Image 1: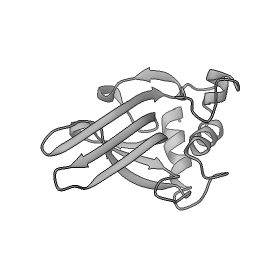
Image 2 (image 1 turned 120 degrees about the vertical axis):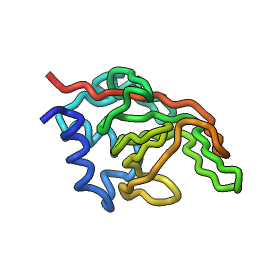
Image 3 (image 1 turned 180 degrees about the vertical axis):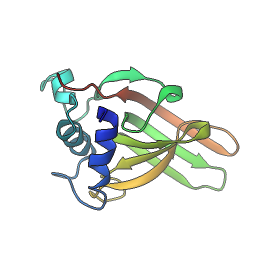
Amino acid sequence: MPVNQTIVAWITTRVGTQIGNGECWTMVETTLRESGARTSNSIMGASGVTANADYVWGTPTTLANLAPGDIIQMRNYRYSESDGAYQTRPHHSAIVEAVWADGVIDVFECNVNGSRRVHQKTLNFLSGDGISVSGRWWFYRPIPRP
């Protein structure tokens, strides 16, 4: 099974549970390790993985090429609608579950709104039609371990 499929299969069985300390980094790091992929520690080195780092999770990819099992690293992500609804992710990592049209991505994440349990959420990465999206984000394709 390709590593991205293994990642989605592994994390799907953990929805509703807490992985380790419940931090988003721990969820992604553990999922990649358990799925046979290189982790941020193996890519960046332990000294590069700090609490405030923009983690590298594999080979950079684009929104247009994003696939289930890829990783999104976010910095100051903010989504808002014209009716005032909004979401923020100041420093966050998530795993792609599904990719839809117009920059809409279903993700697995944790450590959001006080919950350290893995849950599924829809995030937008393109502005338009009453939606504003800002911040920075990076998309990564996990690398299988040799």
